[in-house]
Length: 318
Length: 318
Image (cartoon, rainbow over all chains, first blue to last red; front, top):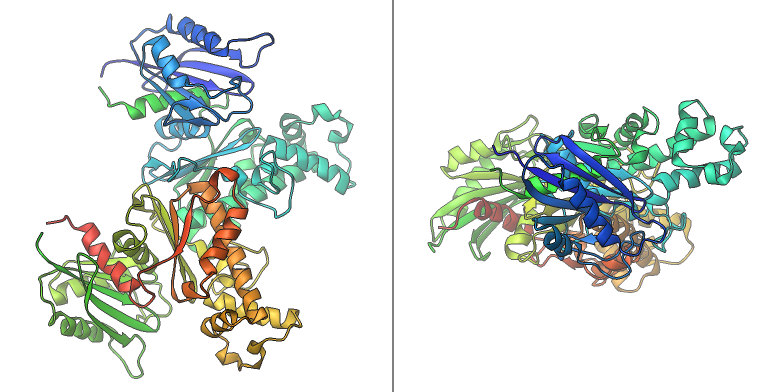
């Protein structure tokens, strides 16, 4: 097999990450730059320069470029609805990069990219049916059923984060109330802590922190150190996610569920707690059959690996 | 194209229905007998006799036999877990019928059969992604995604009826509490009416009926005639089903949702009310995109048509 490379690009609200990845999933070179830098007026040009710089180190021919981004349309190749990205109007990023770098380019939703990375190099390699849950600022998801990503009849699938978990519950950034991601995400975890501080009288180290320091990271750390309020918040998140996953398991019976995103490492027990609550809501025949595990691709690199996987999965093996 | 026939068999708890169906979905002959008749000791023999009698009228060659049944295992060909069927031990019905009638035989879950009928001859003919909801004694379902029935990683998919709709809610026959089918099914509708009779003080014709006459049929009829308690019960069912479907739409974005089963015709407005509640729980981008409609295959014949469809869908067109 001829050795080739894929350039995986992960465009996030905070940073843009790039990796040169070979077919076995080894990252040969990496780069990262802030997506929103002060005074930056031309993000596309900055992106192309970063890509060109990285490609100077490519030891093998480039098979293609994979770009993962939130709110993109893989069919048209446009990034249109990403409120956190520096494109004020819909931007035809696929064709733009394809021309600038003279390389086959594919565009893919960020959560879909994470699922494809899991399929190609992670825990889902042997699976034809699995679910990926990305615990980030929001709650992303991707469904892989019968050997294919579920895109839906209108290209809108995988909005698990916006299923209603609590009727008339927390206000969501989508304008509605009670969406699952207002409880199950880094932001949701923070809101749960704030609510518990008002609700409960137990002491907690989190009460001493300034509001700005109350993050998923500090809450996870506090939970690991035994802080009861932080543990209560993580238990709430695990229970709600477990309940939501139970419904999905009863409907589509996947082989595995993978948790990715920064929050997925919150406490060594998160995946176990989620599985516990999920199994408690399943018919006996389903219990214990569906693996719930944290993605092993790494929170920092899963995005670029997934974007690169799309290049290899879409291209025939040569 | 050579004209052939499929024999569709629909084994239900009350009756067993049979239809000789041609490739265009026309039923040439039908038969029906009670599944549980007094003094009946050998159901398989009775079934074979009914099939042989029907086949005497076959004007074209038989392409195959399709059998739809609850609680069956399409892979092994056994009916094992159907509490309402007259098999005290797991019965290898596929091989039994295949040998007795010298014909290719396929076994399929009843709700899967209904979905395949919808795909072959119903409203889903042009769809690659749809959901079928069977409103009967229980709540059956089938998911058709990316052009295939979702069977799941362990063959357990499509238990929509046993997703938890109300934590610590109504006791379900599965032993747990709050399953969707305890609210959304013919049995669920009856239980809702009973609960509302205790809860509300509005007059209702249903209060005059003996308990045994309180059925999905009498409740639907009362609702059509304007009975406020019956309408309240159907509204409750529509809202709960709409909410459950909204979650499915956000996750898998189907093109259509089909309601089948006896209760699907309860009031001309049921599909509309379900769609209304579903759309109210969707992100704006999804609203109005997913058709919700009553199956046009007919409650009496959908089961046999679906079982027959499995024969044609599995076999190459000759």
